[in-house]
Length: 392
Image (cartoon, rainbow, N blue to C red; front, side, top):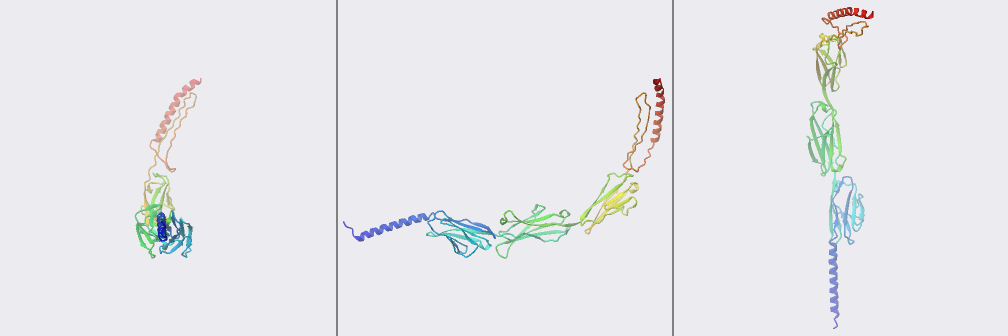
């Protein structure tokens, strides 16, 4: 049977339609594996941001980057926006990478990578720009400070995003008892942070180094630090140091007036019992030292040392008690054991003192010496005949 041409054309058209449908289904199925892949990016203000879009399967479809304002930056390898900071890093069927140099806070936002399939597929990448905090400044007081004054140190830093942290240190040791505050900068994007440290000035803080450190993720391992060396003015502190612990008659005694203050105290003033030194011949002052020569009982009393600077005056006292000098008698007698020797005797009086100007009268000493002499003479007369007999 011969088919009519119209029937043949109809069958041919139907077959062609089926082939087109099958091809479309296969293409749609293949396109389901074609998705752009991006990642969020963080950059430091003034640095460089790198945006990368990748596609694992791509049937020669174009890639495009656009900014938060939906302006096209790059379409494949073709630059679309006139911005010298934006450069092409890599362009292929599987990747489109660009870089933005000298990033500013206004560059922050959501960037879009588009894959031009049917339909168009997109992936979002958020660019976060960190605001770099400025170097901190310490204000709030004038140096030097008088001891007892309430000190208020204020540390501040602006331009950080997100808000920076401030930490206080004294000679390298962190101080926790501080107050913290933050406020928006006029640009509405960054922050100014501040921290206040309150304390009362003490002489122990003179020369102390106070540091304020800014910690922020944009600074990596190099934080910003401001330092302030504290100068405290204070009244003198005074103490008296004797040259010997137990002064005795005939000795020399030196009293040293140790004074410390800021500013340095003026030359010290020595007094005895509230008045002038009574014996300038034996009592001499050399700077901070008072020397009393050949001590005697009349030197007993209270000695006072005063030190003064422009902040105030301080004093110390030393009560002097002159002690007697002790003495001891040490007799020594030598009797030879040899039969042919000559008998000798000696008596030695030894006086031990701590001064070269002592004279001691020991009751009974002279009498003891004469008794000892008589006994030795009697002994010599007794053994003389024996010695003569042995020689004959």
